[in-house]
Length: 228
Length: 228
DNA sequence: AGCAAGTATTCTGTATGCAGCATAATTTGA
DNA sequence: TCAAATTATGCTGCATACAGAATACTTGCT
Image (cartoon, each protein chain N blue to C red):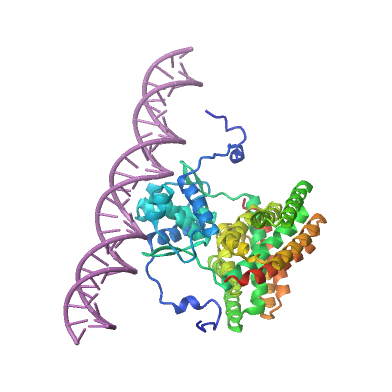
């Protein structure tokens, strides 16, 4: 119908921004961030009354948000006992990274084939900025940009479903990954793998990118495994 | 009362599975089935009061279930307007099948490498039963078993996260797939592809299975595309 | 003192009530 | 007759209230 297909995935910006955010949405985002940031310890129970008062909302939207978090796999609901922040075992981590690897490889291959030059250049820019943060040892910002790059590669595929699945899984282990890159040699290793990924992407070599992503995810598993 | 302090840390596995189901869960399942079966037409609005009365539950658990369905991608929530059953465009379908392909390929590869002989034999049994249903042209039962086989292959990988993601995506297009196999030649094609998959699986040839799954999913796209 | 049983409290699960927004219907003006 | 504005209705979003279950605590008994 409309020919808005300049860069794939830009359709959302064309729409008049929906400003009506429901409380449920607001709470959901806040809670998710709090869990990822570790303000709720894994295994900890979420007291509806308490958290609701803390956020200044009633229990209703809070409960709805918790149900959504459960469906995302960040919390676990035990009937008549409440919700607890999900604890991840080493096996969970392995399984998540396995799927994440497959998703990112698909994203990478598709991005090499279909992404615009501008999109790839933007990712390269992110990478360069990240390398600068690595030189200055700004670990938190580095990590954020790192995540952003992974997401950007997947987003460059133009596959919204893929983006959604990837985001869901990434959220589950975001915290672990952050902790996992502690130690200079681990960090250096991760950086080297990223270099390889970006090189493959700029060459639009899908197979090479998939291979690099695979290596990176396998290494991530090794790096992160210790924190469990 | 219980002596759970024996093995510290492993307590989670020792718990007997609590089967108590909340109303929210019950409603969620019913609603999901209703949408997949097409009892709610795509684009149709879900009237909380009406559906609640229909199911015999109050609006509260119903609302929570709807939020979960939204997070699964089966419905869309428009603030202050309610929830509508999601409509899938041809592009959505393409994207979903793309991801589904990657997931099933991963599942297939892993299953070839790790599944027990018994698990593979069980899948083969499912396949044989399905072939019998094909001969007798029992389309509905054939379809159910077809879905079950796909799920079983993924499940045989032993990766729970993969199973979960796969189930979520499969639910979104289950209905389309059912309609898509109409017409004898399409059906025959799908059957042939399944034969190929099972053969690769019994040989534990991961690459062959992945290739067969890829072909099957690509064909599925072609078969289903017409119904949109 | 230690254990068990009963009680009390706290929290979840569900229902109901109220306010605001969106849409539909109706009326009035040109 | 048609269009625009205003009213009216119905539904969603949120909060509060109530019932049942689970846990913590207290008290009595061995």
